[in-house]
Picture 1 (cartoon, rainbow, N blue to C red):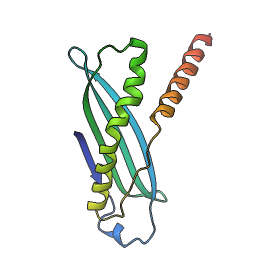
Picture 2 (cartoon, rainbow, N blue to C red; picture 1 turned 180 degrees about the vertical axis):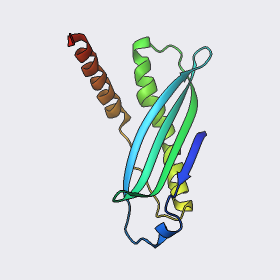
Picture 3 (cartoon, rainbow, N blue to C red; picture 1 turned 60 degrees about the horizontal axis):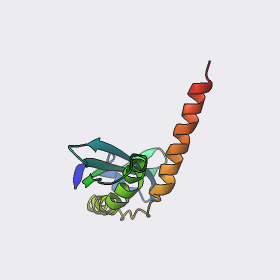
Picture 4 (tube, helix red, strand yellow; picture 1 turned 90 degrees about the horizontal axis):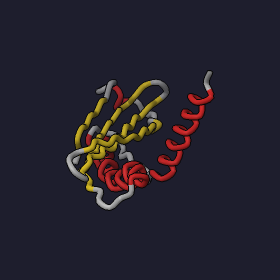
Length: 139
């Protein structure tokens, strides 16, 4: 379900007179909140900005959340569940919400391309390993 939703059109109503097509910038993140037993909440945060130069035509932030249950999952596989499986389930709903909100705000639809959450998860793991190695080497 949608946990949080915001839309900003900072230059309204004058922004609608600007004939330049905005460049779409996307940021994606997720958070995990343990619940009782084997339940946990995963929130997928998608931020989309339509920029023309340094000016934002619009900014949309959606937090799509779901409650998941993990039974018979090895502890070492929980990161994969949190970082890949759950975001893959939530993303289509967040994608639809972003598109609908941008269209309702009077802008052309923004159709987000599928996200490779496995690649993002691997990149985060690699960054965490690099950070850990820097901390261990530091005098």
